[in-house]
Amino acid sequence: MLMNTPRLMERMKREGMDAIVATAPENVTYTSGFWAMSQWIRRGPQAYVLTPAEGRGEQAVVASTGTLDLLADQEVPIKDVRRYGFFAIESDICVDHDERDQRVSRMLDEEDCGDAVNALVSAIRDRGLDNACIGVDEMGIIPQYLDKLAVALPRATIKRAAETFRHARAVKTAEEVVRLRGSARVAELSIDAALAVAKEGATERELAYAFHAKTIAEGGTPVLGVICTGPRSALSSGQPTDRKLVRGDVIRFDVGGRHGHYRADISRIAVLGEASDKVKAYHRAIRAGLMHAYDLIKPGVRTADVFNKVVETVRKEGIPHYRRNHVGHGIGLDGYDAPNITPGSGEVFERGMCICVETPYYEMGFAGLQVEDMLHVTADGIESLMSTSSELRIL
Image (cartoon, rainbow, N blue to C red; front, side, top):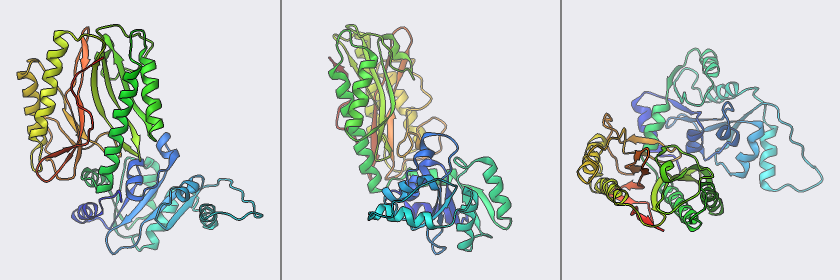
């Protein structure tokens, strides 16, 4: 189970919502397990999940006809599927179809609702919610569709609900923690694969090929691949080029793909040959900040307090001018779930959160240094989701 149902229901009750509609791809997958490919890979395609409050009816999925095969192939457990839009799918009546194809056929036999809003409205009305308070995740629905929904349901109260989903997703279920641990492990194995080809003359692009190939081989999907060397490692969002490695180069990884739809985001530093005294001293300082966060984080602690103490530690340990806008964030279906570990955040850590803690340092003309671990907040502290150390690696 991905969705933290009790937490979502409690937040809906607090906000007076009788139902909530997921529209962003992360929230659709979160509430149903449905990964609608077109919605994830380009802007515009619509897929929704209607989740009523307790006692107000069962969930419903709104999906385009062209994605019905994914609903069947992924064995999405929600039975009420409202399809919309024409898509040609033929069927050979002379063969015996398996259960997946039979389910697709059953969904094709259902009425075409025309468009996503009509499909959603039909599900809402069938549950007697057309005069209810309905939360709609504003991040995935086309603006004109949101307007059309309000016109179609004149007696309903429509509330924005992206923040409601963000709150629910902040505390992970056991299944989510398992998936995040798996995604972290794939990223670590992929870094090892990239470092295995790191030698004088190897290019950043060759390291990236090795990294992403390993991610795919381990069942993951590439997403984030900042792999830069030498002075280019100071480019915070730098992408691999044909620059060749030379001895003494810093290799910075800020990387992570998806595994089971869940993101990884980790950082490691290696040096080809002997590291300079400055690299060793600065890496030691940023790692001290990361490791201090391990000691600080527990349920009830303010994220802003952790930010301040981590930055202070890095300064005391060797980078007196160290500055950051954040030292971490939540991780889940999205690379930046709640909470934010920033100086102005009012959030607190809660048991069950999964977070990334990071202490990057970028200095143009020198290098970029970064350590980042994925952690799970437990009842009395944290549990690392990592299998490898954030120590400086000398190749």
